[in-house]
Length: 622
Image (cartoon, rainbow, N blue to C red; front, side, top):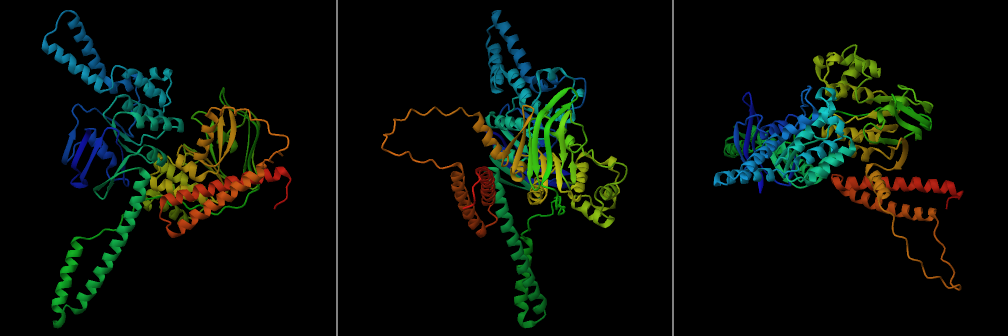
């Protein structure tokens, strides 16, 4: 049964149409993503469905008694109100129903059994069961813990929480309210990977419809069952997984671009004919016919896809070559005040490696980056950068920005670029025109500060990029642009991010903070997940004792580890060649591109393993 049916929705601002004719249906267990460029109306649509703003047209048909909850990007006000009270306020109606049931039960226990009282009791009980039953408090507590809060946090005033924690509190309130329709605007912001995975599982299991806006591609792929695309005031509904929609969208854009190009060429030919023959008597009738064709084509004009979306231009400079060892830690102990973060940690990063640093929130990732760059002193042990290493740091809080001047002055001082080149750089990072270039750095919003800090890192010419959450506040297209640029960067990268798609695409090795130590894993995020699952899996049952071989049968020699890996390398090379042959025919196939990266990464991992075994065996090449 549908929780909501929306028909021909229309929204205007000051007489200008934001969107019109938007129609869709959401049933329980549907998880519909809203897609489209910034300004298309995604957040506005969510707030209209939450009844916070009105629509100028269309109809919303709701399931009877449907409960709606909205989490958006506006954190709650900082106040003395405890977290517990704020989260449970979303379930105030359930508490009221419980109170009504207790009052009715007392009256029935006293001997009242008239039909009106029994009917009220049945209706109240149905409302509570519709919202999930009597255990709603336990479910609310489970949500709070799943989003990283502790039981001690429940009694803390809201004013004692950070902005990111307040955003998580808003998400907890929406999830705890047991809605029939859950509306989520950027729910992945300020969540670590453990909380992201918890949220993904939560959204897969709740008995509700979900409409969401997000830029986290891994999250969208894990959760989405349908996509509603908003663009140029219209909507397109697509049932299916996120990656299937992206592939269909790319094919549709390509077809539309070609159709628009053909139509433009046809119009040009017709106009040339009319211009040449409209005053020639023998061709006048044909010219008039062509004019009618032109009018018909212009009335049904095919618009090319809108590629004017403002996307940041990432193009790293080719860096100078550093020494082989880029970063080395030996016996490293790191503290944050009295809290121990790392004990006797060791790792090394070599030239050209793209390494991701992962671990739960509070495990010391940012502190380790700052220690590596000399911004903090280690408690003990050694940590150093290698010969010729020039590091550029992008922090979560843009602490490296010079706030003493304008945006243009900060770009020039941070990169060494002259004014024209710095202005061009700022334009690629969406700072356009004199007003934005001369804006004081101290007056920038959080998103603007991050764009400026990224611009400086991109143009720094550094050969060692140290990036702490670079995708925060970036839209989907900009994330993909950054991903492509980092993949192509010939220098060394050390990356901290909760964007698992970015980790999987960019990293060829992961350093994981585990029990105050650093463990190394080959490959990207998907490889790391498989390694963790293998570690957590129960050991295989012991094989049954084999029947003794007869003495006359010689034992079959076992292949060495080197032989096994060589055989795997041959198979991986064959798989890569097969995918590349298919890609040569169609580079627009998103799944083939992903398969090519997996095959290439698999071969790289096997080759590193082979090299390690080969060097350890003292063999000579065959």
